[in-house]
Length: 419
Image 1: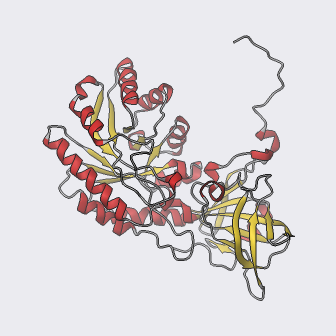
Image 2: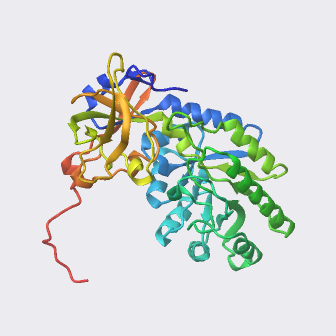
């Protein structure tokens, strides 16, 4: 499903008119695109006892979360804040899984009190903490062990999570020991496995390899007398950010799961984030000025790395288009940059684009995931507004942050205390 048509329309809404009303920088999301992706994955998984657990970290806007909950997804969270977002958006607590390597006691307690469906446990220390807190509450926690299958996902090093040297999960031998000694944790129902090998996976071969390793380990545990009721294969499905990239189809992904886990009679969980929302969002910005350097053309936008960090953090590619078309304009190779005082505040280098002028509107595509959710107020730049488009109409789903709101928690050093 294509949401940007090159004439300035995004999901049926004219972006130039939209920014006249709401200003820039502006995040714009398509509800139709998100629903379409959820339906495609649900249809691909049809016939399996499977559930979708959306990775809230990809885009935690409450309106987006509400849309996903209404479409039948559950939530994959990694913090107390994401737990509160998920519950407020309408996800059932039983449909929430809690991942992450550094869960605090307070977060574990909050999740137990809420009655979440499952913890994905990443260390012995965490397992001990869940047991201690669960027994103090008189509760039984349901948990899966996050295994590290030591599979190279062939993605950017900073988003690789399934190799032995990564901080996530535990080796199979350690996981086996936990199951063999699970009587040591009587208040933890240890009956599942979890993995996640990385993000932006365009090649499904590593997924198939990791799934096969998980399936084999699952069979070993069952033969040893350990019931396994849940297999969570994580997320990481990639999307098309640039020409030449081919994103995995939901049907191909589901086929791998059907093959790897044939005969498993428990529940399968998948944790897509980017695949559901990335292409459903754009970041719209105005050109502040065009600067001619000694050897470079700089296109300076009013959006910056604090609005969209991915290019600076991961050297990530995003297509950038001039809104309103290219007819009759010569092509210029621009370094597309923001106004933040960092050389890393760069969206693209030597990018061919139709000649732009101050005041023109541009759209940075594929900005629905790991974009607004990673935003900051660096250089004292308030957070941008976000809008959701549905059926050619839009609603503001996060107001543009004001300066006063940005500094609301700050105060002079007048209330001195002794530690």
